[in-house]
Image (cartoon, rainbow, N blue to C red; front, side, top):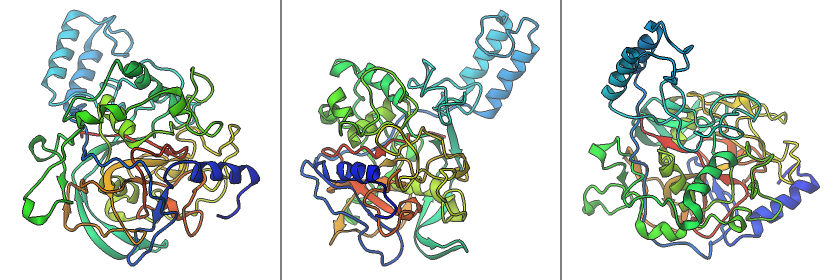
Length: 437
């Protein structure tokens, strides 16, 4: 690793070695080899689960327009807030009728007529203070990603994609603008209630807007198995959720969780195993994105960009990406409040698709001689959902721990990364949820 300070060296030593399995990466370009440490992950769980949320989307423009028109027509409006406290009965009835005619309910906060997901509903630090913890946007803002076809394997050095292979077709979906904050995750911990409260219903968490509610196609099964779809949450995995302070503070002074709300609420939530990330997104009305969906958003779809924001070098000023240990954090790790790198937005507006924290994806990933197995082609709304030693993570992180061969390798959209799903709690892996369109 290059340009690391003494503080960064300590953080990397803890983050990359003091856990059961080591985080690994490989560049997603043709003939690329393994990217990093090939830790075996001693506690790899062999339970077959897959999935993504059955939450419906909502917020359609026609309904929104009807609601807005109803509000503006009322002489007794409460000032446009939409709270209903000052509206007359006729306007309330119009709004109710418009809302009930919508085919789906809210999945995000990018429309004034949408309801907040539960992780942001209380409001406050890490919930309604994005980006960077200093603004007033909902940290649950979810932005629509227009569907299309792209190549999952490509190289782009700034003059356009080359070496294209492994095409994938993606249907439209929503992807949250921000990674999950400590403040948002705190609401989920409360709902879980020490294991006595919320756990995902069996079968929940599918991409319910696809294939008549059956979700993504599992391309990992043998060809003679026919078409197999994602299964959703498996009830036996309830026991893999263990949101204790000790677990969420996985690496002593190198984590973001605090027992009580404090100064870290706007930081990304880390130290989560895959099952907890998946359960959070289901509870919050969404699901984990597939690897193909995540890369599609980061690459800008068929633009297949060099970086999510384009071709500008990320530099060292934390404007485009939080990486390489350049961010001047005060908590022992160079991690930044979500959305700090405001110039790094992708085509559809998501921030931190490169850097700050890696993000859990839905797919399993298998390795051969330390390198990920080839993609399965063709892919149309697909995911690799056959049990393997690792789950996919994407996006690079604040230190680029274990990412070869340069500090920017993990920032490139085609770069494939992985970690063990049930045994590894890393202080550089977080969550971004996807939702129905």
